[in-house]
Image (spheres, rainbow, N blue to C red):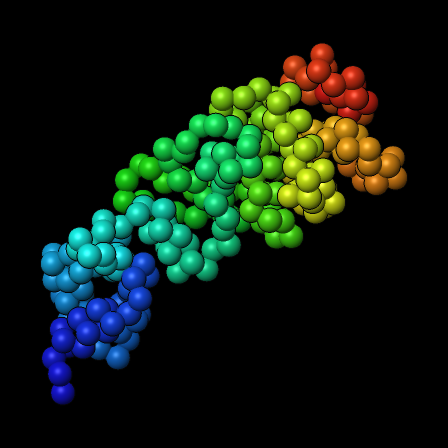
Length: 236
């Protein structure tokens, strides 16, 4: 029979790049031998050690092995942990036209808090109330409402206008976002209500959002001067 090291080396080399390898992938072999073999492959640059017992196979080009993209590593880790996730943050906001800034950090939104080890600080994993029933851009839109003042190189009123335009263009579904907003913060629900009013949604369609808000709560977001409709959602 071929040596353990040869079995592991052949299996790793023949597999597609950008995937994780753990001891469980070689359950029929002695763990100590697997650990030693994977460690040796990491020293040779064939795989990249993500953390103890977890390795990542980088992509091979005509120039040699590419250093693993931290975002790809984290995506693989989240998949390996069976965590639901979506790309988020500045890179998605840029694609949506919410900001012109280029992301220096890859951001993921997961459906629950999870510990992951990033190769460096250029990856961030945040959590969101829900990922189900919304597209990547719709989830990012809800995040933009949640972090309205943190969307870079823009203003809160410009963000609201752009999100309304994306709904008109059909890139965002107001109905799906409204359903997802049931578990969002009151501020997000109020801002989504404002967008719905700008879109001309009916009173009946917006009733669920309105009834979910405390009529005594005021949201001071500096939008009252830009949108007369904001007052009906207690947004100032």
